[in-house]
Length: 159
Image 1 (cartoon, rainbow, N blue to C red):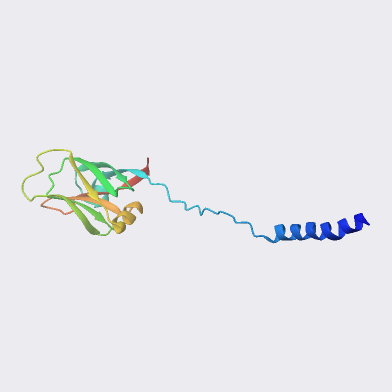
Image 2 (cartoon, rainbow, N blue to C red):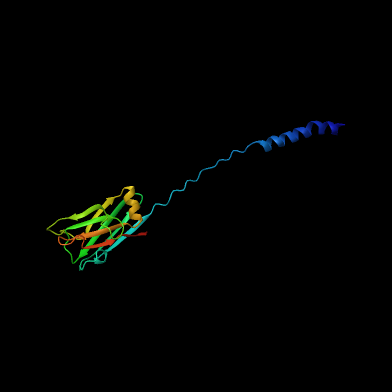
């Protein structure tokens, strides 16, 4: 009789407790993992010669620099030889086009730059950054006779 009373009172309590425990929703702390793309730094180079313009010019040049995605900062150093520039520009556009002017690095009709290498920096807006990373930027060097006389595309390589 004691066993029947025990089963009558205790067993429903145990079953009820198990049901309550199983029906409770567990609170799961889910941290949404927001992955940010890695911030990259690029090495930039450009060989500047007559191939970009199909002109018989002896002029050559090299642009070297870096681009930091976090700071949106492009820094560059430009050297050239066998050419007296009147205008040096950074441009954005497809090959074979005049492109859109981004920045004039040097502009003078009569006197060449006093000091080589030419150095500088440029903070980019989002559109400029996208076009740079797509490989659409080039440098053009013009003389009083021909503009541009030599040019070359900027290439990027991750550090």
